[in-house]
Length: 400
Image (tube, rainbow, N blue to C red; front, top):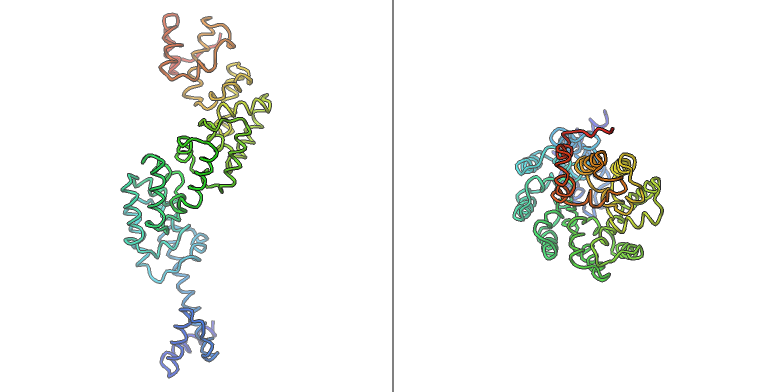
């Protein structure tokens, strides 16, 4: 501390000494990164380094405090974010925060943006942020959706509108409806940040050359754009794998299968495979069910187990029968499986249908609501007047 105090005094005195011009010149060269400052006396260079280090520490402390007090970051998060931004005054940063708040960003979203993309605090909001917000707003993107996209698609804030965002929009719009382009922004804003030419366009060509129809490619891009994050070679390998599994690449199921095997979904697929085997499915049963309904392999473990337990243990259908109609596992337990199966239980108890094995899973669970009511409720309403109430959950089924 004593040494530092003396250093401050010496530094201040130098400002008024005949050698102050030398120090000032040295300081300027040090800050801007002059590549040839070696002709200055070593003593002056050392003093300059102490001086600039002291200023740097002051700015660092201010930056960290600002990130904590004004941006809501934790001390650890502020220290980490301060590595990428240095604030000399609150004026510019305050204007950025005010701009984001005025455009619908929540405090949580602002904290997320600053924590992960702290240089935004040094940007000119009117020149760098406003044009992007106006562009997305012109597409019909709501303030809430845009705030979410920018909060998690952080690179968008530093991406060129003219060179990358707008051309990527044009590419997507040539393949998708306006509504689905907005869906891509919500689901994977990275596409606009990275641009379409690096992965999206090459991957589209991979799928086209494999014989997958444009309608299927557009569906995959709209609803599962993360697939297009893969390297083209990797995506080509997935297409070959799906083809070897027996999928018809002309059908929409093929792109759903690609999604099910892509990236982190692979571990979900493997886990689902093991769970189904616990219910008595063979490898062939799993592959057959996957070909019929690829989504049966991307469900959560909880949903899968609850649906299987209800259909097998509560209703009495064999797991092999479910393997032939895997679509039923995808339906909501509370909104579809339980209400419709409750109706089937009543009909069984009243003897109006003979045996659960005679109840066709697909005819009971797959039809739209209108067809189900005509086939299983209206048809028997005279014999069981409360059947509609059972279906609506207002009357519980009592097993005799």
